[in-house]
Image (cartoon, rainbow, N blue to C red; front, side, top):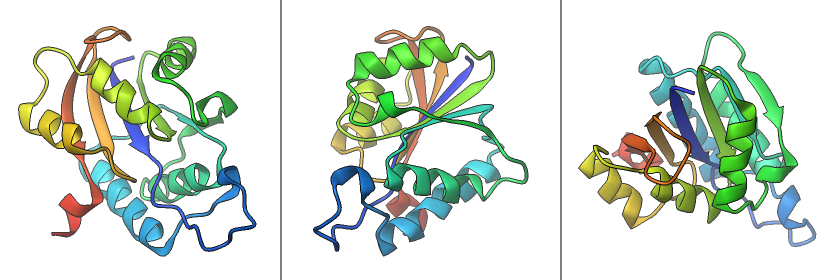
Length: 167
């Protein structure tokens, strides 16, 4: 794998208390944020070869909206193991994917935030690292050049939040 993108699902809705966590849809704010991230990626030519996506409704919907900004579909695998996973479990899943190209992982906190912090090694962009250390909000995207799928084994090149694209 050359490039890894970690995308936290967009903001979900809590409007329907009868829905379980897995089944919560995106909120209006989430539906506005997801295409901003998709456009940001498309404008930079950041198109993954493979998407590993949590099957939770909010993650699936985030991925659908982000991917709709690109001219061609991306191979997508919905992996139950991503839902509320720990960083080590996410690393194992990424190792199993074993693709020579780029991967986007669409998942949940705290796993996404913790994995991103673990991967960011020497040479990481200091501004991106500082923004990421503040908070890994919904619909945030971290981009890494990967040398090894291990703690400190990647260089954080970019960290973008929806609010960075609307201000």
